[in-house]
Length: 152
Image (cartoon, rainbow, N blue to C red; front, side, top):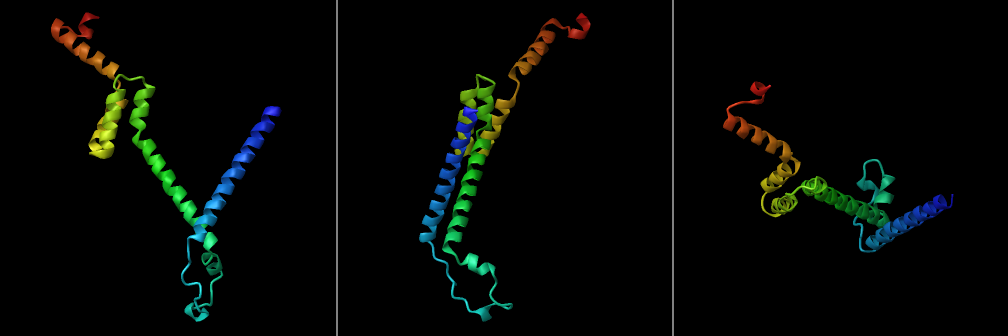
């Protein structure tokens, strides 16, 4: 029970800090902004002044929108980086001997050409032991002149 209360208060503290930093950044960016066109006359609109215009004229609302937009862009870039590193993570998970090669090819794919990244994906997701067994079987049957069906 004590552990649940600690986790609840830790979650609550993180939520308060996150919301506070979000609102602080929104207020900071609202101080740096200026909404043009606040003084639009009513005859500028065909049906009078829209009610949403009061919200859109608020610098604080524009600061909130700016922070949300930046957060979405940063999150999408983070997801693209995770996608880019999927080959490296897969080779490390499989404890592959090719992990350094996959990492190097992944970096080449980032800075030089995307073809290197595709090659890193192929190397990372290939079952090299199965390929080795298949090649050994082909060589063995070529040397002995027998395949497995004839021996059985």
